[in-house]
Length: 476
Image (cartoon, rainbow, N blue to C red):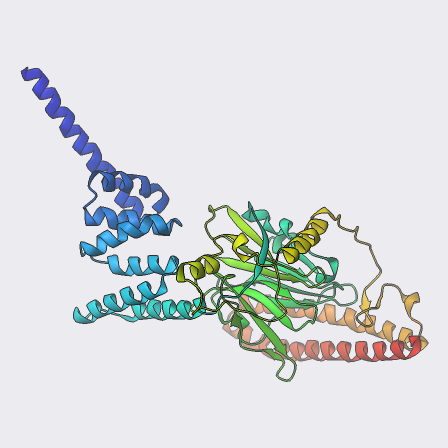
């Protein structure tokens, strides 16, 4: 009997030790932000002691950080009821992720009041409060959009699922398009004519910015950052330009985003040579997760965008929709709050099927695109755009003798521009590695070469306009 008692005691002691060790390991994983690994251990402890506020807090945060806001909610609410420090801010974030913005606002305000009483810093909580207030305003303007399909694909190859018309341009991954192992970037959009690209590229500070390049005679110009406030976010990527050449959609993160990457739209202002202040496209396109690569195929009247909402780490969901000619929003005051949240979250695309004929017609257009085969790309001597409908690929295409002569001059100017641009890049690289005295000596030469390159660019553009005008008068 005594032996049995000793064995029972030892077994119990070992069980407690193992549990304590497992909890310590889970807390270590939690501190390293390895929430997925820590979550099952905390789940076990919550199940054993459901009233323990700390266990509920840790498990709730793990669920929140791994994309399970519904599962997290009751545990974070329990932690707050138990007055566990730090619980309120995570509960407010949880409400925000569930689109319960009024609850998030109330919880943030309570948390800020508590910080004020304890004379603790409030700046971060106040920023999060303003974000929830902004999200609540978005909820009152959910766009009424008809989504016809959605499919989950591998994140690394997601662009392969975009089936858009040739008239809408082409999409590439940066590494595929530029094949430059020395640089990294996001995606590339090439216009229908193939004479301009917009792309995101990693900058010296590690962030992504959007640039553009123009096609010269047989080479691309140097990339230049898009002007205006597009690149003021932490990261700006996934550009797409409508056929008007003015409207650009892109994704960015930062202070103004709902969460992660948000989709924005802006337009080029020819009077200021810059872009207007970007606008967040709002819900249901944007969410607390990453939403990006918004494309409008005007030829097929279909829209596309990608989102990792409710998806595993390596997956992304592609949504296909019918774009509106102008923005139409649901009536917030007359719509049930739960239904409004479901529409904002894209809970079910069938909830948006108010016009079955439009859905069927759009599905047919989509199926035609999915079944279409890409055309083989032709190799040309060069590409010179005359107008929206005419592009020349060889010298014999020119009808105007004067335009043909000027085009020879155009080619020589472009060659000079390339040579000088390459020389400028080399000098800049040398300058970056040089000492203080060498930099002083090199500065004047670099500034002079920069002026020459800029002037060559202006001369090339003016000559191109002159060639186009001469050719247009001849072929009328």
